[in-house]
Amino acid sequence: MSNNNYLREEEQFKEILNNEEISKIKDPELRNIRSKYWGLRHQAFLNEHKIPDRMLGTELDKIKAEEMKELNEYRQRNNKN
Image (cartoon, rainbow, N blue to C red):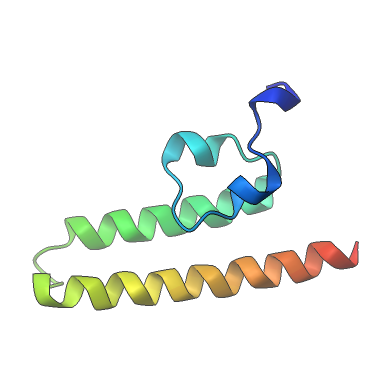
């Protein structure tokens, strides 16, 4: 993949990315973080037997907060390098 196909840095940290955008993240560690949380959100939507509709928003907010925490930790680690 050429550099032209990668997302710009600010795009990599958008609140929500789709799978195509995630695949265009150059750094494998960051790509794995974003992919992990995309999968968790997707599973929450599919897990209607364990997560009632009224609780889905709360669950998604929790996943989003965990993702933001991990992204912030990633940024701190990589700003030191």
